[in-house]
Length: 296
Image 1 (cartoon, rainbow, N blue to C red):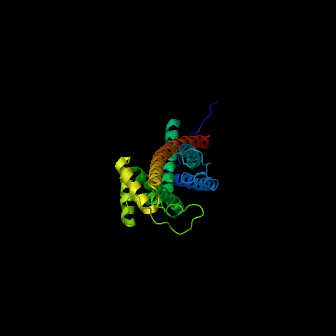
Image 2 (tube, rainbow, N blue to C red):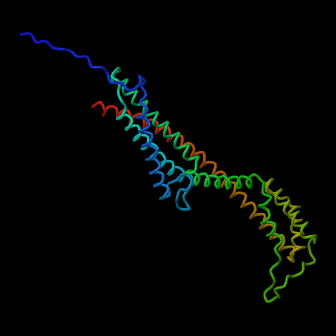
Image 3 (cartoon, one colour):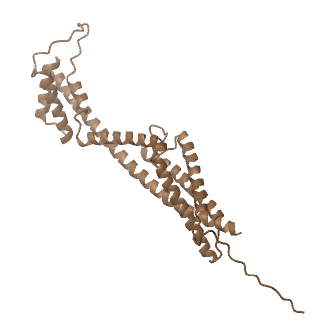
């Protein structure tokens, strides 16, 4: 007995257009990724996990601070991108005109679009009012770095003022002596105090630029210090040597701070870029998995 079967062709479901890009699903993934990212970054900032304000012990190297903050940023970006990509893969309307492999590729491409859109939104948010605190902290850090660089490179006109003051502090009165200032001793070279300070400041600035002070400049500094402070020649020479040593130590410290800041900034930028790329790969994979689960 023959059995007749009717074969009915079912038209493939299509959207409002023939485009392979399902924008509603992409927008849904972007919204989820951005919202989840804001929540996680806010929580991280509350406990000190921030690229611009990372809470750590004073003896922790800034390099390790940058690595820890970068790891947190990597976790946030990858998690958010994968969540948004997976949602898009599950919600994308599939057109049954391709193989399973091609469908996976299309799902993954939708995940990449979610990652790209979420990244653009995050950058726009960071550059607007919600990123004001970050911008302020970044500007402050840049100011400190620039100041440290100026000192390290010898542009220390203002920095020498402190050391000039240290040179011309009046001699301390002897024990039991009156508290009134003691007239300068008749040693050294007594000149107008303003001229003396200006010349000493220029010598200090020149020494910072050259990295050393000549013996003649040291001797002259000792003479004008002795002639304007009441110190003996030996005490004035000792003060000059101490102030020059302190100035050199301050310059070396500023140079170390500037170098550490530069290395930390480079490392932070590299980790941020790497986290973006890893997040893109995670969004692609998660969207493909979402598509497979949708088909199942």
